[in-house]
Length: 145
Image (cartoon, rainbow, N blue to C red; front, side, top):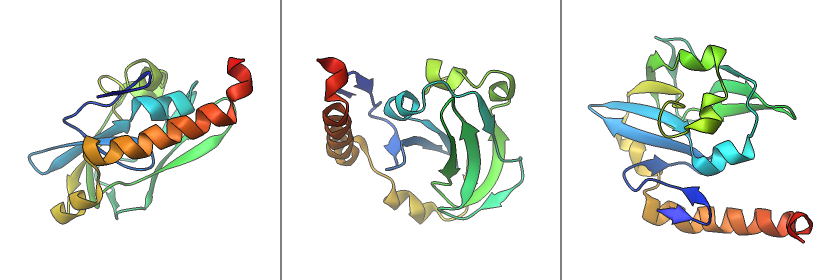
């Protein structure tokens, strides 16, 4: 689904924190949405979790640095990290270039599959993302004049 100029694939789940989640075989691959990567343009560095680390839903799992700030990523699910995107260590800009493909962040083996009910399908996420985009455009309307 396209909302304004941002893509949101229909086959993914989403968080309010601008992450996408793709669940397959009890594992969840996680990355930034197109809207999320636009908010965090110019990612210069990302600290990914270590394979084998365990996290609970909502725990701080990672931090990343842009030109303007350092921000955190909270775990969208409880579980153990099974894989990280090693390419991001040397090339974090991949996140901005290809957020749904090569720019994925990590995979987590789900400990509590029922937690996926807290994630949003595109039908539920779309109104939220539309409202966020609308607010941001109003906030920065002077840039478009």
